[in-house]
Image 1 (tube, rainbow, N blue to C red):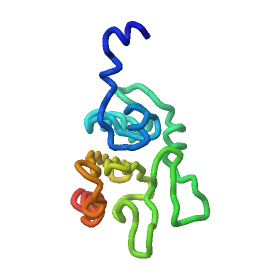
Image 2 (image 1 turned 90 degrees about the vertical axis):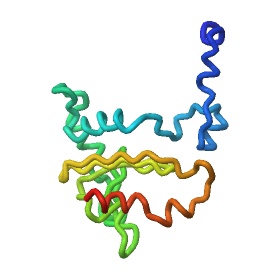
Image 3 (image 1 turned 120 degrees about the vertical axis):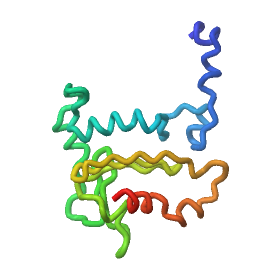
Image 4 (image 1 turned 60 degrees about the vertical axis):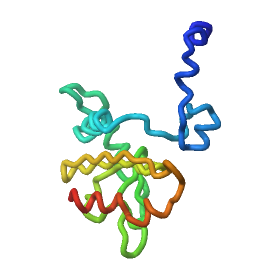
Length: 157
């Protein structure tokens, strides 16, 4: 602890964050936040797409990958969830989240600030979309009004 303080490492962790809970905890919190880049995320997502294999080495057991990415909500066509991921689901009569062209085997995550990643094994697809809808302000309207995530899928698929 003394070594960290003498080197000023505490200042390194003082970052401006756009999540209020993380902000009141000094910018370090396990409640939320994606602190990575698209290239590094793609490595992890490729490994999951490859059933836990990275560089010809089994990093995560394939059964664990299956367990975390399959739907765990039974007898409910509107709500599909994996243990660690969102799944394609119906959110209204005419709307499928996040996009109707994704397979039922697909999985992903959408974040509060607008970030998103999605993996679709049937289409051999990985999408990483990093954005910040709360910077420079919290005008929620524009991000959601243009339906950017859905349009991104429409362009790609």
